Image (cartoon, rainbow over all chains, first blue to last red; front, side, top):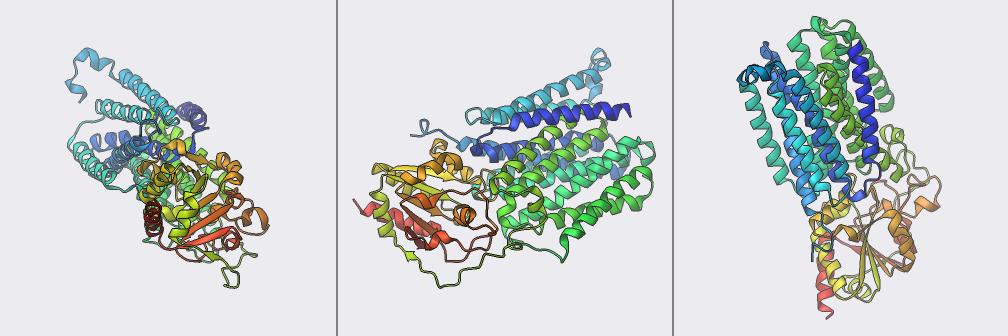
Length: 96
Length: 471
C-alpha cells in the first residue's frame, strides 16, 4: 500500500508538470506535439521487454512479444513521423 | 544482459538503472517542452527519442530479463512496421496514422498489464497491482478499439456520420459502470478467469461503442482524447510494474492529451460530454438542409483570378476539403502567383479545421508554406474588414455565420472565422450539399459571396492557369 501512495505522488506531480509544459503551444505545433507525445506513451515498451524476456510461462512470453511489437510500432513510427513533419516546418527566411 | 557486467557494477545495478530512468524521464520533459516552440521542436522530438532509447537499453540490463530471442524478434518486427508506415504515409493521411500508432500504444499497455498478471501469477500480485492491472487493461483496450474505429472513420472504411444503437448513450454508461465494477471484482478475485475475460471483452466493446457514434468534425477532440488515454494506460502499467519511468511518461502524455482535448472543445464551443454523448444533427431544430429556393452567385476561374489579382489583401481559409482533394500544393502555387503580383496573402486557420489538432498546418507545411504566413483565428479575425477577397477552400462549418446569428443552430456559439466581414468571399466547394453538421450555410447566399463549384484541386489548377494568363 505504501508503494501505491508513493507512486500516486509521482503520478499526480508528473501530471502537473505535463499540464504546465503544454499550455500555450501554438496551433501550428498541435499535430507534431500530439504525435510526439504519442510516441512517448510507447514507453510501455520497457514493461513489455521485462515480460517477454523474464517469464517462464510461454503464454506470458507471447503476450510480452505482442506487447513489444505493438509498442515498437508506436515508438519508432511515432518519432519518425513527427520528425518528418517537423522537418517541413520552416520560416519564410530559410525558405526563399 | 546483466551477467556480462563486472561484479562491482552488478552490485549497484538496480540503483544505476533507476538513475538512468530518471535521466530518461528528464529527457522526455525537456523534449516535450521544446516541442512547444517552432524553432526547437525538431530537437525536442529527437531528445525525447533519445530518452526512449536510453530507457530501452537500460531495461535490457534488468536482472529479470533472462532471454533475448523474443525481445529481439519483437523489436525488429515492430521497428520495421513502424518505420515503413512512418515513411510511406501521406501528409493528408496524418490523422489516420496518429490514430493507428495511438491504438498500438494503448494495446501494448493492456498487454503489459495482462502479461505481468500471467508472468507473476494471480495469487502473487498485491491488491494495488491487481487494481492498476485492471485499470490498465480497461483503458488500454478502450484506446485500442477506439483508435482503430477512428482510423476506419477517417479512412472512409466506416461511414463518417453518427452510427449508433437506439439509446447508445445509456448503453455506454451502463457498460462503463459495469466495467468499473468488474475491475473491482477482478481485484478481489483474480483467480476467476471469467472476470478477466469479461473485463477485456467489455473494454474492447466500450472503445468501439464510444467512437462509432462520433462524427467526422468531432474527430480532433476524439483523437486528442484517445492520445490522453494511451498515456494513462501506460501510467497504469507503470503502477503494476512499479516502474517510475512508465508512471511519469504516461502522466505527461495523459496531461498533454487532456490539454489538447480541452483546446479543441473550446474551439468548438462544446463540452467534452456533448462530443462523447451526442453529436450534431440530433439537436438541430432550426436548421434545414438546402431547399433550393434561395439564390446564390456562381463564379469562374477567370473571374476569380481577376478579383484576386487586383486585390490588395487575400486571405485563404482552408478546411478538411483541402486535405480530401490533396490540393495543398496547387494552393501554395496560387498563393505564390498572387504574391508575385504584389498581393498580400495570409492563411486563416480555424483551430478545428480538418480532422485533428493542427491538421491544416501540417498540410500547408508540406506544401512549403512558411508557418509565419499561417494565422490563428484570433489573429486573422480583426483583419477581415480590410480583406478584399477570402478564398474558402473545403471549409464550411467553421465559416458559418449561423454560429453568431442563429440561436438554436447546432453550431451556435462556436467561434468562427468572420469571413463575411470581408469585401468578397469565394467558396470552393463540390456542390451545395451541407457540411458535416448537416446544416445550411447562410454565407453561400450572401450578396458578396460567390460559389466556385468543383473539386478543390481542379478548381485551384484552373485558377492558377487563369492567373498565369493574366500577364
